[in-house]
Image 1 (spheres, rainbow, N blue to C red):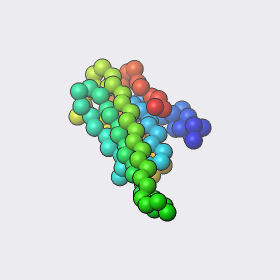
Image 2: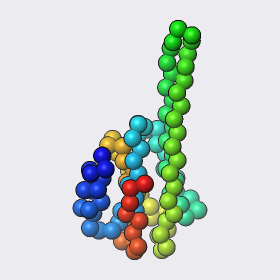
Image 3: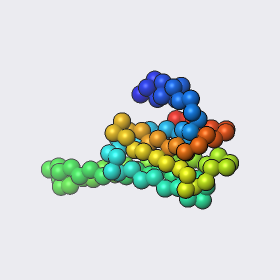
Length: 104
């Protein structure tokens, strides 16, 4: 996984990519991205129900990751995609310097 992400990071030459966030173990519809107060917050929640001899058991997993926007990038400019490959890709429509190109 890390090699795949490092290849993606090294192949990005437009500096529009702010971050890649790994949300492995969550379906795309379980992931929420919010841009507010100069930050991008990625949240994910997953719940599973299992039946056992003693009754029902529940497993609950959640994840929250947050980054600050670089200077000069406005909240309304931020775009994101949640791919089936368990990566959230956060981008801007224009180049940003310094770029927060990283795996979080």
